[in-house]
Length: 361
Image (tube, rainbow, N blue to C red):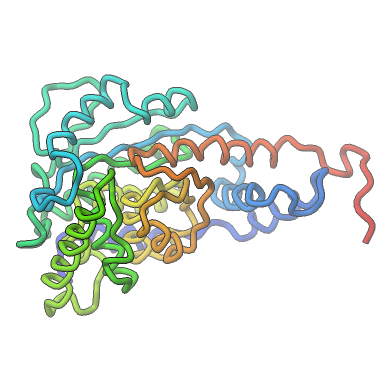
């Protein structure tokens, strides 16, 4: 593929380093020396070891948390694949800015810097306070009829996420969450999931934000038609991830892909949210497998495709709360768990320092 996105992405991929295995081993050694039975903190120990391998000598420093919510519309929405009308994307962006959404409540509660990014909403906004205007175009094309994006639009959208990751690094943000808002984006995520994992569309296409059973069946048919149109074309035979993203993805999914690639380049861990966020993570992983070591799965949503993607990525969800909201809510909810793991790692006494006898062999 000779997309305009590839030179930039290729350069980033070549500079992504794996986290330090030496620090991971040292972290495991310390975890085993703490005043508890070995492994008794379960997944918290895995989280701590992964974070230490990424953060190394800065592991004891407080985390600076931020969530990035990418908003964009989807041309496929005109096919009746969502329970909500397309203007809800614009309305929810305004709700984010007015601090009235679930993500606002959670971000405030857990002291997470919130960033709302317009990468492709089909509306014009005034100079709204707090909105990052990075619009590539007003929504994708209807992927049932043509590719969702052209190569230049794909490159621009990925570039938005890459640039925001660089800005996060400059602000010393050390734990990011990736969220989204976009009517129709579960359809795009379903198509991406089916294409990447070779899973039938019917098994990865759920009810989204609340479709009826008959509407869900219609949505599955649309996804199948989209895949037939794009995935059997000559250039798609190899299922190259950037081409999948261009043909059946979304502007916000492309921007999240860029954020995850850029965060890995700058050695910043990212908590992915639900189905759509994880679709972006899967594209980033398919492009650069080393990205995996910088990712945490905030939760497992109710969308059937989300489980398929988590298995594809080899990620174990931190939470399972039967959520299907998006916005980054599940990722932000998982942030205190990551913080707890790091506090336990840094502040618990060891058997030696506490004068506690270890278990008999």
